[in-house]
Length: 287
Image 1: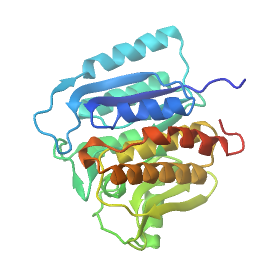
Image 2: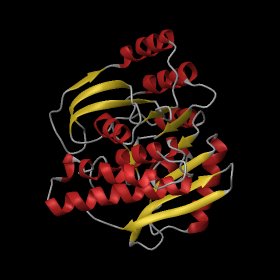
Image 3: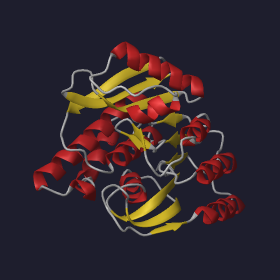
């Protein structure tokens, strides 16, 4: 039997409202990947649309966990980061990469900090600069279009998008350091929405999309990035991993919309977990 993959997931825990660790852990686990976690904070709900939520910062607990793991001699096939709540946490996670990364460890950074053309109000204006340095240490980055623009210190442009413009952004993001770049929220015709992927090592570049479904549901970026990470860790080429992540995410959105669920509550990805494993297994060399 093939050795089980192991990925360290560094995210916050929102106790209600499916996102961050409550998305990453079940998706990666359902894909057959051991997923030890480092929670960066605990919130009663995520911050999108909820008021009065509780927040407990766990910044000071991160490095003791990492040092204990180092003392145990643990090895990781992947490190996957998402929402980081402060400049201090970005610096700490950068140090985590140095301590936990092995020769073949896949480092995936989802630079969660913005959407719809705007930096999240909890972040200072220099947060993108710090995130840029973290992305430079990654093998794969998964920004949405707003985050990509902020990483490049460029204006944000709403869709439909121009292919030449997207190609230029991909090239610029590669120059930050990561060999593989995935930009989400891309639409070339206003009807289909998806992700562009680019692998500087192979020259592979592709666009995976499905028909757009409104409204916007919270947590879909985490669903996408988690499914993408699972597929990559099981050996899927980047283009195929993008296709799998897009389909899994859009199917979760469609299931949620049909049920009439409050969009703040996140999407019903749980009922699609068996299908995700099947999609990954369908790839030569997959799980």
